[in-house]
Image (tube, rainbow, N blue to C red):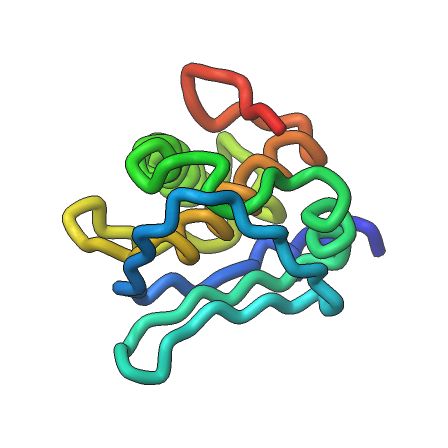
Amino acid sequence: MKRVLLLLSALFFFLIACSVSQDKKSFDNKPKLESDTIRISNEEIEYEVLIIDIGFSSWFNSYAKPRNYYSQSYLESRNRIWILEWNRRAMLPLQYNPNLYEMTINYDSTTNYGYEVNYMIYNYLVYFQLTNNQKLGGFTPRI
């Protein structure tokens, strides 16, 4: 049953893209996430991120740094490395647990998804690595 829940949590997002820009320099208080399904979208553009994971909202409310703590370029560089490794593992189901890496993530490093999308993807990937004892890049995720 736990593997089934992990399988469902691996379907955590559909990234099609997002182009929201923020130029704020001050740290905003992060809002509390109330649901296990987090949707980040902008109706003016065609992109969204969907995160479906039972423990993510609780982890996010407890451990995630506030928005604007990291720069957008920092988030993009970490996401780029981690998503490349995620996708590599998703393509090798005999070598890596297919219940963890069920699908690839459509993330184009040349697209400006904006701060919010990169912030939520970064936090989910940190959460995923810490809770599943995985290391997606050449560095350990930090909270």
